Image (tube, rainbow, N blue to C red; front, side, top):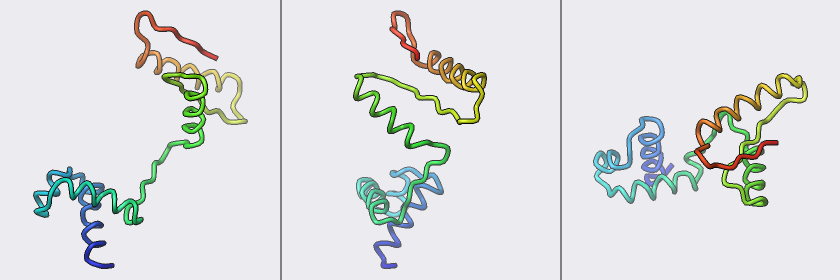
Length: 115
C-alpha cells in the first residue's frame, strides 16, 4: 500500500469508524475539508471503503423506484412478505407499515390510495 492509499484509509477510518466529521479530520491532519471530502469519495472508488447496508432489500427499493417513476408517485412503501406467511401475518405486516406511513406523511387534505 502506497502513502496515498494509507492516507485514504486513515481518513476513511477516522470518518466511518471513529465518527469524526470532515472538519475535525481536516484540522487533525492539517488538510482542507474539501480535500477530505474528495479523499473519502476516492477511497470508495478505489475499493478501500466498501459500504454494506444490513437489513435492506435493494430489490424492493428498486421496485419502489420503478413504481414511483412509472406512476408519478411521490411516496410508496412496498411491504415484503414470505411465501410461508399466513393471510393474518401478511395483513399484520401491511397494517404496521401503513400505520407508520400515515403517521409520518399524511396531512389534512391528503389523498391516499391503498392496495
